[in-house]
Length: 182
Image (cartoon, rainbow, N blue to C red; front, side, top):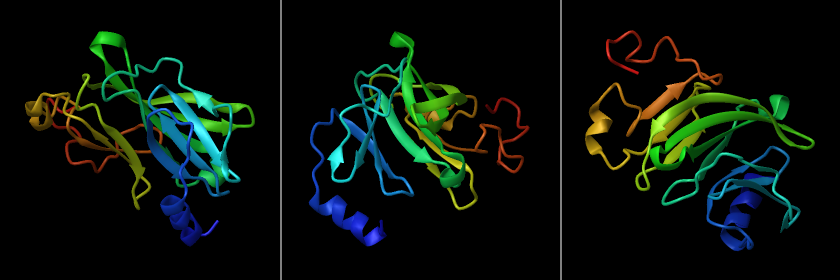
């Protein structure tokens, strides 16, 4: 599928039957993967939404501005089939977790937690995932309604995080080895 066709799709097509869609990504084979706040990863292909979800996150906390949020594909998705999801979990003391899965014939498999315990609340929970041109995973986090957390290096709230694709911290990150930096 060409980028022009994808752009036309975005402008002219309405996908119905979704419950609070949050993020979308195109796969190399032309499918559209869509996250829904209640925890479902949906697939739109060949002009229609698949009836059954590709996957449902079992421990998602879908309230307020949280739930299943972002999705991104590994830069080598065509070869390794890795995709990444961010979602809220944990009831009243909600946190955000980023998890890598491998797409398989039966859905998503090989769960690997990339990072977790990112603070959140009912509001300002946003979390987006994207890979940069350096093949690093960038994660933006909400401030959990406490703006001062964004300025505190011991908190992951209100930040742009940069990680290797396996969740390790790149040696050239600016706060590596700094006292009290998470």
